[in-house]
Image (cartoon, rainbow, N blue to C red; front, side):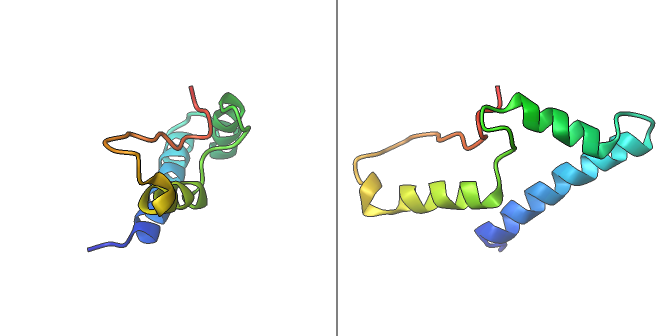
Length: 79
């Protein structure tokens, strides 16, 4: 089975491939689409694999011992 970092990199790679495919099909160029996506987030960037990994580490730590059944969106404030 794939490990978490590999899955996170795969997700980011798939996002970039989709943006590139849309650009090649005559849509918005990938860099322009990515800039627009970044501009829509509260942090001015899309969430990274490091952001997701840190959230996962927190949830797996003793600091989160009182948290149960939570869905934690890690999306850099994407509306």
